[in-house]
Image 1 (cartoon, helix red, strand yellow):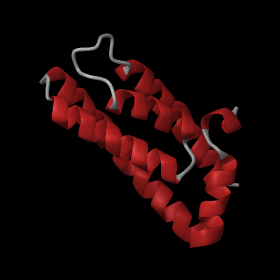
Image 2: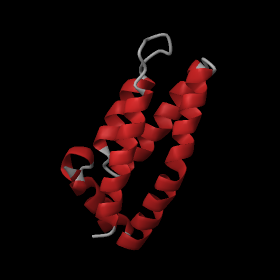
Image 3: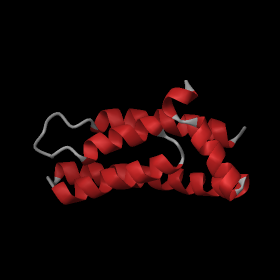
Length: 111
């Protein structure tokens, strides 16, 4: 299941390049900040703030890509390229994907 959510090779390469401890620190920062990014995206949807929505989706995507969180990055990319007027927006799917991603990333970090 982890491989479907997170590209373990990408995370291993990050650990090799940055050192496992620093990669874990970066990962912890992402896991702390991602809920705020998701909340910002939800607020942008509620306020019909197209630019805020695009920026929030872009931030989630960019961070997810660093850690090989492919499912989250792919969904965020689709959201980034989707207009607020396009319905339905997969915000609930993003939250579920984030939950699964967080579990997978914690497992990798703790290996």
